[in-house]
Image (cartoon, rainbow, N blue to C red; front, side, top):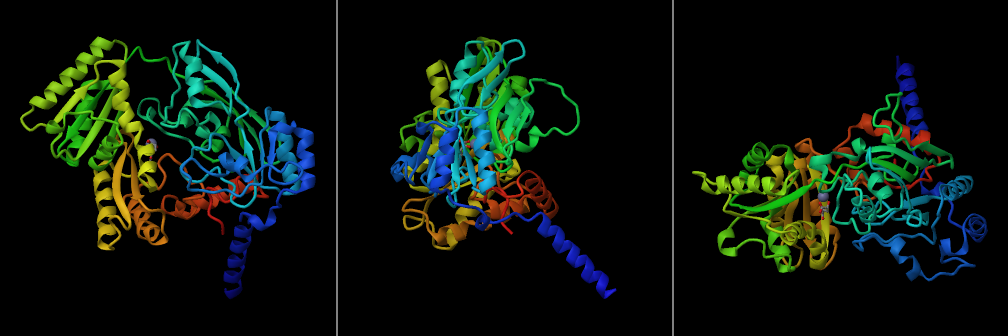
Length: 510
Ligand SMILES: O=C(O)CC[C@@H](O)C(=O)O
Ligand SMILES: [Zn+2]
């Protein structure tokens, strides 16, 4: 009996070991000889390195080593900028033979430190792979290199009257390969759904350098395991996405929006139901902004959107968008909605405005889309991207603020503002806490794991759309059970037994 138990424990440990992920100590830093090898694959201007013979300055590497927020500072000595899938494959094959870690990087606009080199891994920048491969105006399928900027792709297909199925505030600099690697959600998720549905195919360089060509353009392909799904949201830990094919919808003929002020958060849910019922399928976005976020936007010049006297003490705001077939018809629907909301016996809103021109349409969106940048101007934001039941949005924000107050950490010396905004329609709350004078360990300790425990108590997700990166590896367990994490490890081990692909991201080290 005793030996049987011992046997099973040993077997368990052996199993764990088989799927544990080698640590950074197994990886080698780039050497002079490695650079000489890279120089056989890439032209000189595609290699940046602080090592001899290149001797670039550390400043030259800042765009690759420091993330958009200036929060994560990477350690890469070398950045490689291939132009072809073959070059990516040659680089990866060589890195695997030398056990050199690789951080695939697109626009470096992520918010969780997913594209930063933690311990001298090379940065493999996809930005020079930026050509459209094909577009079929009949099916709407776009095939493109991973390094294409999202907005450039939008502009490209606009001439065919199509739009990208995703839209983000960072569209001017984020790249499609990064969007897919992080399974970005964004502002059109409510209407067009997840990239797991709209991505039809991928080309991926696997961690041994093999090119996995799954660049299918088929809508229907029911031939067993759908491998491409594994790379969507894998954050570069299973391979380097080099090419994508994605289904793009026809551009709506008319887009309108409306901005509403609500007295209390508790009105948001009934409002969402009313709006869905009255607008039906033309509703394409339903975004939430709490009072603190709205005021911050105004302080930074993103308004005024509504008459301050009518806004009064409104506690939150909603931006709803329609994408339909007829501008006047949709506008009339929104007008009727606004009128019925205002004239109800117990109105759900204080006031609202309906955009009357493309300029007004853009300025309503500008307030919502500009919030992330406003936060950066206010100080150092602690950012949490959560899925929680809609009814809990405000409770979560309030609980975090109350905790900081109770610990004496709320105010100029600590966290100056706690706010919530996000994609109500998708159950996705962006909770931000601003440390005006910089990040401090005691502030982080007050926020985490408190926020993650709160999210877990609601069976929510610690990452709704930004990913895990290096920021949330230890928080993964609040949203994934042990069995799920163990199978994630097994998958990682199958693809990347040496752990050269974006090490230290997504999976916690054991
Ligand atoms: O700033 C954030 O926390 C969210 C960023 C982005 O996902 C957004 O929805 O604007
Ligand atoms: Zn978002």
